[in-house]
Amino acid sequence: MVVETVWVRVPPSALEKQIAFMPSQREILLINPWIYDFTAYDYWLKPLGLLYIASILKEHTSCHLSFIDCLDRHHPLLEKKLKEKPDGRGSFPKEGVPKPEVLKKVPRKYSRYGIPISLFLHELSQTPRPDLVLMTCTMTYWYPGVQLTAELIRKTFGHVPIVLGGIYASLMPEHAHLFSGADLVIKGAGENEILPLLRNLLGVGFCREVEFKTFEELPSPAFDFLRDKEALPLLTSRGCPFKCTFCASGLLYKRFEQRSPSSVVSEIEYFYEQYKTRNFAFYDDALLLDKEKHIVPILKEIVRRKLPLTFHSPNGLHVREIDSELAVLFKEAGVQSLFLSQESFDEKLLEKSCQKVGAGDLEKALVNLEKAGYRSEDINVYLIVGLPGQDVSGIKKSILQVLRLGARPRLAYFSPVPGTEEWENLIKKGYLPQDADPLLHNKLTFPYLWGDFSPEDFLSLRRLLNEP
Image: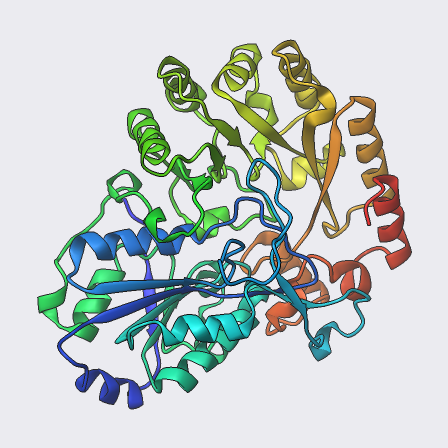
């Protein structure tokens, strides 16, 4: 089963007039917009959903595709070479910009992350005039990047139809419809919406009729559009069966689906052979679930094929699933960057908000990982901070507990995600209005604008970890 998707469109206007006069040569431009935020860092971040759509378009349409990545850290025309770690992580280019009025009270610098505007305009000048533009946006509070991109497209090409998808469009379709600058907004997974939409806009002669019934049936992402392929993201599954009160996974994907281990490994080997990619980041929300039928055979086959690769887990791993066998397989297969999802040691909080982890799970996982050859100080443990009702003293106890176990605490700042249980509670309690600007969803607003503890408490937590 594929997640139901809908698309919201503007009233009939210049969009229909523009489409009516399209030339016979169909050009589609795909764009990954800028990030506007207080902080941003590239943890193997790529526009994976957009690249899946690009692959579908390559296989099932006769359109010519162009791609511009505003977050391209490796653009050859960047004046300054950016710092990068051997595993592919690195800093984005950035430029300080004025803070929006609603964020004035947050004492942090605000920036636009990505290539300079002049370089983006240069890319547009080298691109054939598009008949259609497809864009994505991840965080709801990154929508200013979409607005700027749409504005520059209009100035360059006139009224070109713009379609927006991604997490922002899925969680806040009405806001995206009104404020993003896009003409059409796709809500949810778009693989079964994009081709009918193009047939409607461009004509039946340019697109095949195809329906994808499972995630397994999708073609591999079109990574050939990326300039640097030393490190690539992977999705071996979509969705998550857990219902954590602060997580949007269940809203974005109604069903938890895992790909077959054979297709996952074949895809990995193909990217290694085709692009010489050596670093892969698992972006699953529930990578270790049903492990004996999924991740265990994947890792065993990677070991059997002797693939000289390194793997990373930035989304966090379910600690209760890490037994001694899995820990050894991690080591043998080259899983290097371990990020574990503990969230808290407050049992009441876990019972209420996050039942994927329990008492003693982290200790057992760390013992198994150390026996397999990992150093505890190299293992990262996510702890949530800022969850409504969360006590500062409890957060400090969780930090100290991770430190006592020898691992590295990583603070995961709570962001109110529209549609989640925590979001609804914040609305009911009056912390946020129902129509709050998505900029207020930013993870760094809570201690300054609406959180349960003070900026001083927030700073004390960061000092405990020696964070800047």
